[in-house]
Image (tube, rainbow, N blue to C red; front, side, top):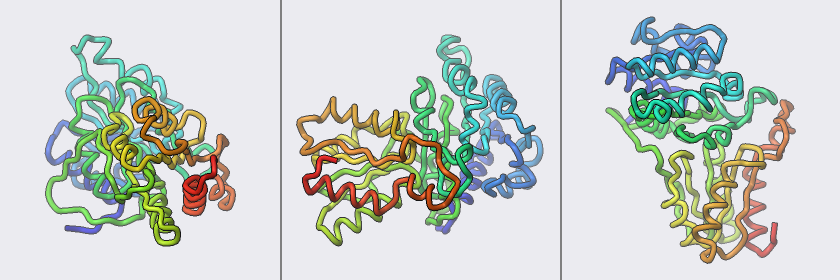
Length: 329
């Protein structure tokens, strides 16, 4: 058992799969000798060499085009888009090429690749480098979408993503790279499409992703210690496939549903889950479904403004408390 940072877990997960399967290659901007701009791929170049760990030009279209060609011809590439915001630059590949290839060729071609990308705010990178875009990617049929919150999940879900025969978007939260967690020795393989109950509870269900998971957990502890409200916190982890079984079972048990989302409110991932809950377990709800989100604005670079925009422990605690005490909003 070792204690790893989230960023070291990225390198550990990639290395595990590159050691296991020589078809796995890795490419992106400054990922080789430099070890990545977030230092999440340190040591991979030295271990696997320039044929399997390749720096690319500063062109997101070139990176994903090369990855797609490699995947179509027998390799299992991992491609890095440094900041998730710049998925917009190469969105044709993400929306029109990767996910449709198997369907359009009637299974004659596949596209088994992973796109890693630094996602989310909190690091003062400003409006063009701080977005949470998981809701952009979950809407596209044919893509799988993963959002890990812990070093252990990074390793296990990376393995599951690389081994999957479908294209997977792997969102790593930039503000979690420094956090630490215990990761067992040996091979670790998780399962896509599975949520985890991080804190059991009986009074309300709180769903969260990535950086919102530790914040939701802290809020839940405060609510219980100070107000006796016992919240179950679920780390959604995978948006596509979505573990509706775990989520809905929790809602049936608690009768309350809150989502904590870093993405802007309009068309956020929580809206889809709220819709599913309303369809499937409406009569088990004891109150309104409540979404705690970032406003529908570009994220500011100023620290105090960014902190105001992204859901924090105080806002989560206050919203849950008010609703549980009878407020409608």
